[in-house]
Length: 94
Image 1 (cartoon, rainbow, N blue to C red):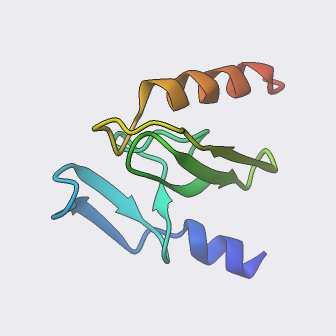
Image 2 (cartoon, rainbow, N blue to C red; image 1 turned 180 degrees about the vertical axis):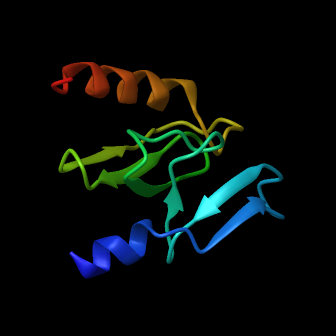
């Protein structure tokens, strides 16, 4: 539990000099936010070039992985991954 808390604790926030968008990072992981919308505020993980995405959500206990076989220009908030996240969110109890 202490390691998960550290992974989810914001260590930096602001414009990412590589991605050129606002990001939030814990210790080695991106945190849920506008540039990388994950399942919710307790999510941490990282998108990849081309639309891939992996994250875990501490509150729901869900781990999520999505890997594409084709490159796109997107790095964050890929619409395909976001559609899958919405579907997962819709399956969770309110």
